[in-house]
Length: 468
Image 1 (cartoon, rainbow, N blue to C red):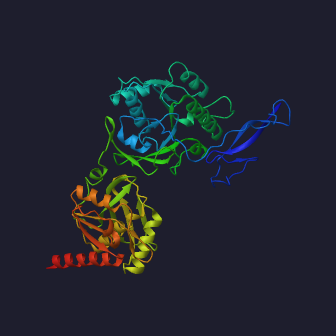
Image 2 (cartoon, rainbow, N blue to C red):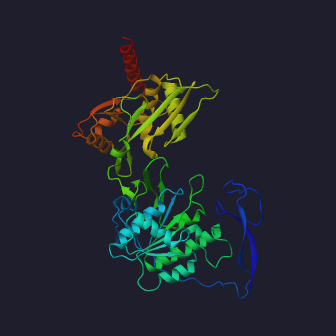
């Protein structure tokens, strides 16, 4: 027989405790422990599983034939780029994003694109009624797509319905936090329910070969709500990012067992849904300020795609005892390091100035190659010297003030030349791998101080010309 045991589970990270306490020792959050019950077997009675001998299996070597996972390509090339070439049979994808960012819109478009290619697609919503999903499909001009809809939250009923007739190729669950199973005695949305529901859906995907996409809510700090074990159970985790004030949306792969994890897909939110952006650089630079101090164009790499984006900086005198440091779209600690290098090795005094840095377009930059562009924008704003409008910047700044070369310099220069740029500021060793047909004038610097001197000289020249 079994007895009912009580445990207290953190609703933020999934850690379990035998008694209630105010603070979770695992994640540090307060008032997140909730009481949940589970049936535990006692002793060696009928409810306990008797231990038995294991079954021997065959061990194989590293060499042998490799079968490529069959993929199902959709009509959305940006979505296929992030997934690694299409959807893999039997895979489970977890898509997270802020409320209202466009997760449901994107997945409705993906399901409609596959349904129009004679593939059975099922869209199950636990948050909206069927009529609400139909209204969204009519707004997106997708009402004619043969997508099967349902509004259900019971995992057992969903699996029983999907197992009837032809097995679907794509199943969208919106969202996993609303699903519940009768095998667990807890409310929907709790850690135990999310973990058990995800496990049952993953088992169905592996057994049937259908691709299952789970929509996950995010917390206030951007993490997918629920236990972190769900991210380990699924095959791919994707984050749908974007700012509410911008129409750009970025689909980024955080984890992918069947493809790269550094690819991004760029979309634009329009009245008819999400539109693919095949040339993100041209879109991010469409509204940049020409001839204004404090703006620099950074030639970055996102996955295998070069992306040009504008970095904006504002350096203003402060009236506070501690100057303010604010950054959007870049790492805060990276900005602090660049400011320290400018003060220690370049003679740029920013201790009495507030510093604001922004990456235009809502894109978030993670690579250290943006150090040179950020430093150039800061010095340009402080000196009041506009940078050349036809120049791009990329390079890593070390703590000694030296500039280090970065990877894939030819691709960065080729993308800059394609968009009409004439000059490139990069570290000194970058000439070795620079393409000869890029057509750019390369301005190479061995350390950051030489670049700062050039920008300061340009600022003095402009000031003298204005005075004359």
